[in-house]
Image 1 (cartoon, rainbow over the protein chains, first blue to last red):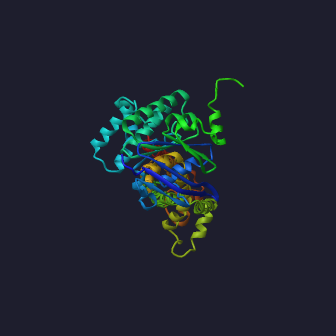
Image 2 (image 1 turned 90 degrees about the vertical axis):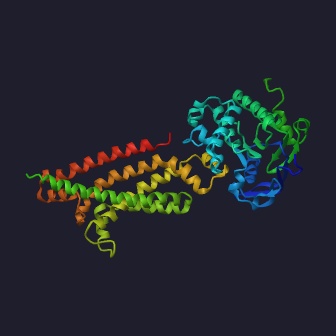
Image 3 (image 1 turned 30 degrees about the vertical axis):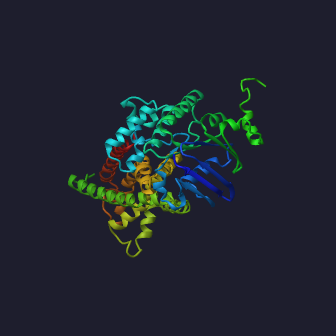
Length: 250
Length: 205
């Protein structure tokens, strides 16, 4: 494990359509760590994620990926070293599962056999078995399967960092829990770093190595899940109140 | 009552087909790249579609009248006719291609960019394949209507099946009019079927 964090965000500010969306954000993601960006809608968490792979340009501040400033890098090459997973998968509807997973390897001109072997390996790792499934189109998959394929696609070229934007939010609770557990298992074997956006405090506490709480474009706090349970800022309490005996009727 | 000889019907049908094919080639060559260009430029898009809409509202005979005196464009003959037909064919081609490209799911486009595809790769591997059914549908609409409108080309010496229709009108002879109208209708039906088949074949999955 190197001492350089995989991702370092320094004093990042960003304005979209005249509205300040991010203010002076500083955050690091260490090698192998999952940092969860937790916040309400409009708190700036997705914007922060998108500044990392250059989908959104910040006004000021700096982002270092593996020690190198991202602003100075070719965005195309940079993005191929960061896996990206979004809520509804964003799979290409006109490509088979196999073709979708092999996207970045193909862009990177991997030999065909290597891409095929990697695809098979990832399908197995995500519990998507059978050669038949790899030839299906996204519309022939269930929500959970689509999301697994989305994760497999993000992992295909073995990027050192994953960017995940509410990847499990659209799934039913049982499938979601299944995928969250599987994601944790997967991470034990491949040890990826990830920046993970969610509005679900349970998911944040379950998956995060650390939880970064965003409020109106500022970082409220960055704590481990254990510390977060004892946090007393108003925003942290607002999120934690959702955890209190949800089964009891008012 | 006198039906024109078969060889004349065939000759004028071929001429008609030629007018339609040249028109559609030009309309596709301008309309599809035009849509690709305009898809990324919202303000230019408004003007272009507005302009193409205006083109469609000019009555076809009047349009020939406007074009005739313009030096380099006008004059008697098939060239003027093709220019006028292109003005009509352009809008459905352009608008359908635009609808197809803009209709690509934003999440799909965003993923493509975020996974590290270049703008060119996004266009050729994602946007155009997904827009293909819509683009072909536009070509189909434009082709069928061009086959009909092209009968007016005869009014300015453009040839085609309209020759029979104008001759039949002048002679008040139904058979001569039908010698123009029936082959044009058959041609439109065949074109519609063929393009619909291509549309199905090229539909992604």
